[in-house]
Length: 245
Image (cartoon, rainbow, N blue to C red):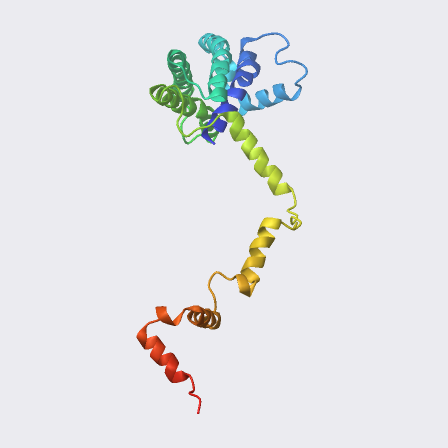
């Protein structure tokens, strides 16, 4: 689940950077005309919750340009590491740079909103802004800890499988839940039928009944010659045998 959350984050981050952040640079015909709803959403967001983005001062545009150059490239590296569950040592430095830029950018934006624009926590529009930018602080910090831990564990995250295995396993569970369960037809099996016949046949029981055991003991005693029997057994047999008159 953790790997899937990172996969979604790094899959959407480049699109947010390119489509949303670059719109503050004043590029003509941006966002593209193929996305007519996006300019309306951005205009509503900037007017309601993010007035700093609507003003877009020079330092804001410079910071946005750096993010547009860095974030898509690093997202490709992160997605590759998640896909293969492989975290080489060379990934540590780009990860630290990525996390530093994210935290530093959000810290600048928060400082400008609080101290520059005079917004406070009592402002009802500040809480949605904080919730919108909070993932870009929490996720990079947690991701840096994950990469560092994986490098110390030999380049892999222990207990985490590849993202492909995770997605395929969830897909199999969904398919299995949608498929109706039909009872399997019972086919005769010679091996199992033989076992059943042995268990059901009284003559082939492994543990004989008391009556059968007494009969077998009597048969064995009758077959034993008199010379091999004990004296007590011979006397007992002579007493039970009627004498001719």
